[in-house]
Length: 150
Length: 408
Ligand SMILES: Cc1ncc(COP(=O)(O)O)c(C=O)c1O
Image 1 (cartoon, each protein chain N blue to C red):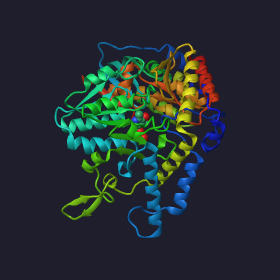
Image 2: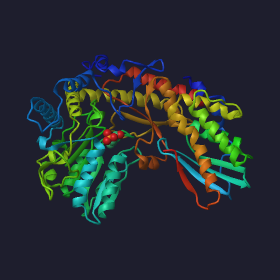
Image 3: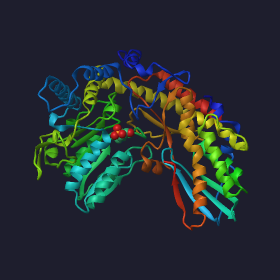
Image 4: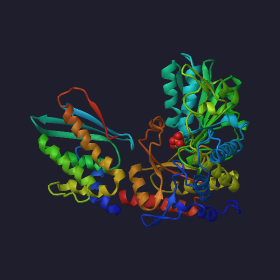
């Protein structure tokens, strides 16, 4: 279990300089994510064109793992349709939890593979994905909903 | 530091400390969350389980008598430890949390009227907030919060200003688990008592770190947990003044707490059994008694002086690191130091420190309202116990410097 496996350069970079940080206004959908164990909080806003996430942003407050994961996620899903986002979430989830999960097709998201050696931190990395799912589920509703990893 | 306080000899009494974590010697600095057990506690529990165990208060057979004797001897040990007047005033519960819930449910629900007020402080742990919110919701009473100053000390004038004709209870922590503040409990209680207001103190962070005398403090209720006093988990103590406990209705029903039961109705057992429904944590009580023997043999004033020296060392060394901000600088603090490091989230700090063998707590410390007040999502917290050393404080400080290097 090496620290630099967890805090890879890509992760430190996305933590220091998160991409797509902020809020879309107006947005087609918004969701708030909260990890009550850590206090990590983030908000995802997105716009859809048909089935495709045409734009998204996140903001909030969290540890390096949760901020970097959210930043990487926004880069990875922008321009993708719902079914490919859902398939990607499955792959990321496997990457975070299974020792032998492949990181093929994940691009920069593969940098998160070190997280699985630190079980206490898996929820930090997955919070943004649960929040994105909630935003997609909310896409038709006007109200924001809260999602929790607890 | 006290020359007779031999911390290396004390460490040798704690088997769990003799290990490496991530290839480094363990520096266990999370005593605010839970303390470790000395061999004497492990042995006492083991001896009880091996030779004495049976159910208590119900058999005529020998083991039942032996178990009852051990359990009641533990109650007497607790009475002496906090200098209560009688063992009738020592109720065994699951922990601080349950002790406070007992008072909130039994005393609170039977006594509080709409418009009555309960005063807590801004420093409280959720365990001393939520039970009162529940009692208030059930009765129409209201919760008032006495503010703190920037250094984490109670604003005593504003506390006094909150005490009014409708105030029925002051419920406050003895030592803050986040900012380390030791509250002036004697003055807090005296001010309440002058006005005929009852007092409950949350002693979770106090009882293992300084001598506590409930009669000198003069509080009505005092709550604490065994596992923060080098004893087993799953056990705690509610001290309550006998006349008050006498007047309070039971809060849980079942075996042990009754005198007579018919299908129509029941009558209640004497104190403290009225509040101890069901089979209690017998081995836990035995372990807690052993922990109290152990701590008193070390000497609580000596332990307090030792932990104060560690706090002073940690405060000075951490303050020297660029970007460190310490939360809580009251004049009177227990061995707890909460801090943040600019540019490094407390959880990342916790992970990096763990990698260096240093166990601390990172998070909101079950005090979300206080964290909101401080404007922080989380802090890192080091908390000291009787077995910590100056070398471990150095290890902590080196690990924090290392975290800065990773991130900044
Ligand atoms: C000040 C304070 N009160 C109450 C508690 C709750 O103790 P327990 O979880 O043992 O019931 C704690 C422990 O975290 C505490 O620090």
